[in-house]
Length: 320
Image: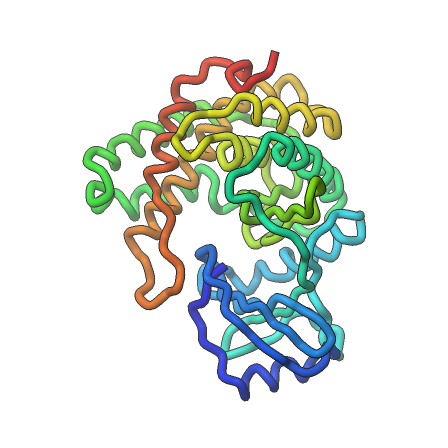
């Protein structure tokens, strides 16, 4: 979430008039994330999130994302849902760009996830995966092997600006992954970006999951690997096996992973680390001027990748 598009009062009033949500009281930009322009919108009837979809989110993909939110909510998954306009549409246009209003979700995201929060996440992720199995939409993961290759090539000539030798490290890892990427694992809808800032808690309860704009169809275990990387490393860079064991244990109690999925987790974790290294590197090298948000450090994921390159077994993730 970030702000790349400024909205005038007149444009905002005209857009809100398409909905039955009351009169606007305030609209404040949310300066987090990197993909869309987001605003906390308050009306005299309640609070909402106004999202303007920027160029990195394809308009053709929006029905998949918005439909998924409705589908998950109907299945009992705590997540925001798109507000329908008076004519039934969930997608409109604001400032010449696609836009939608989404329900507001209460909760706070954890700046430093606690072990119990990792445990709750594992269960919620498994429930999300099971709820999405009968979702009729399909979206290919464009940030898997082929997408990593394109990003690596786009960053190759300037990667040294971030760290000497980084381009060669990326090339070597990408070659390994292309040769060892798992095949024929259980697949379905994945969130693909379930970082702590996309999960809300209220006390000792996970209150919801947000930001589905990377959701796609891929291996379910790959989503688990993304969460291992996002939730189980400490700020100093050490891998916390207690958090990993709790996350994986609660996931497996809700949706049992196959032996093949478990064996594939180390390779999937390497792929997840490379994916976020590459996207962060691309954003670092191509940061839009004037954006409120600071790009995230790609070297955080270079360190995580080096850890996973030494992992020999899923037991190193805290499992027996």
